[in-house]
Image (tube, rainbow, N blue to C red; front, side, top):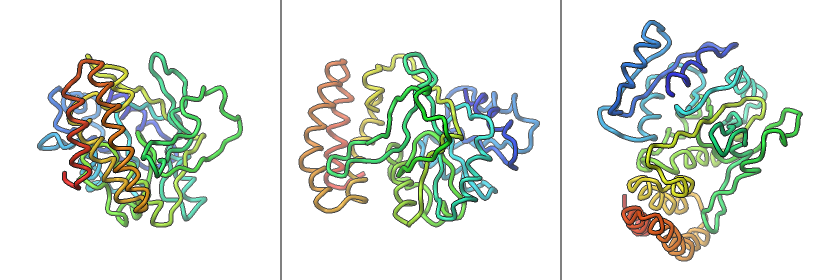
Length: 291
């Protein structure tokens, strides 16, 4: 999957680019596959984390050695559409206040084929629940004229100018995983920059599901205990950092306990008691401000 992703980037036209593959200490033969496919291509570089460090650290590690004026952070379960990079760069050239631009992500997996991920992502500031514009809208229902949609962040794949990445301090590594993308996008918007999704620039999102994954839990983002712990903890950390005092109190004192009950019920219904415990423990730690 990662090799196909890299190949889709290398065929982009109209921009000078390099590709940095960050291997988060995977236990398989990822490194060998990358060297086999791209070892003779100087603009493809491969680095490996010394230990499994998750998304925030991995993205910062890649950005640290990147040379470009623009950084595209792209998850490996993507096939980048034709001319996506030059289309995104053009958006920055047209708008000096643009701080983040994302290609429109299109689901490409059984049960969700040709559905648009979202045309704008945000949060309800009183509950911290995500709000997406037109989630899972069929691709054929998209208006035919090219358009950009406002957003506050975007998961999966997005571009930022290097100078803005440096100005906001990159990804906050204390999040580890989950909400690190949201926090990064919000830092850019809070600094006075715009963030958009372009319907002209596109990526096919394959949405990898690991063997044994329970679809209902995966849909909620709680398929693994540690990921679940980070999700529950970071939800409260994000609210404390970005919401008003009254909104934060609403999230912490009202919505968080209700979430523990709901997510715990769903986890136990699917016979995953460790996930129920992880959500409770993450919520408790988030409430008192601990990592």
